[in-house]
Image (cartoon, rainbow, N blue to C red; front, side):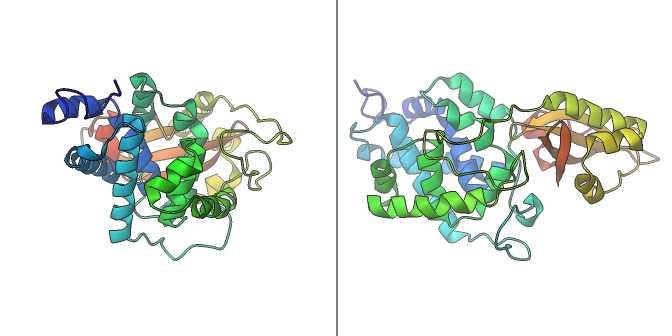
Length: 321
């Protein structure tokens, strides 16, 4: 029997339905995060969307999997949310090239605990859903600069690997419209992504496949080692060591540390990160100050994005040390 609200005990039992959808919640939260760019808003919206799924449970006819049906409900909820709350980047958007995350006031990083939960739920999720390139902060920023419908098309087709027909059904448009939106979205995202090797945008990838003539993928540097070098250099106040681990442009954009600064290593968006704590001269404890998310290229920190400390509880970090 097809798992879903047509099962005995789930159709009219809210508690049974809640237990049924709970295993899908982490990946649906991650899906919403890509579409909204805010970890907290996406978590709240998943809750609302699952309530909508309960109210609309009679629309699940078993023609698709229960997981696919939930994605449909959640995607529509995200588009409704975006339609009512248009996003505007600070100081507008440049015509091309990467855009700093700080230009998007609603953007938040995503704790690695979320993709880790997705990976452990065993719901049939493809590895691409939690792959680093599909969670990286630069990719999420690039998604936010697409119109919402194009954004949804690209995520459904290139991240989830859905056929054009299923994406069209979710969005209430034709297959031709989905294909057209995808053709516009791919180069738009590509032009916003920094290339690891040359600084140029990487070539677009067709859905579910690597181009036969694409250059070989450069393996990731040991990011944890880079993070430890970065933390050690800052801890010692060693400017020479810091220059050796942080690129010049990232170092120039970095603000001086506040007094009594202390950093704790963590990970956000499948990237190394540091939770920053500060302590005033008359204070006994260090208090949460901010989150630094590092983009590492070729064994060096290429970019440091700083966020406020609101997500410390989500990362499992205490507000005070």
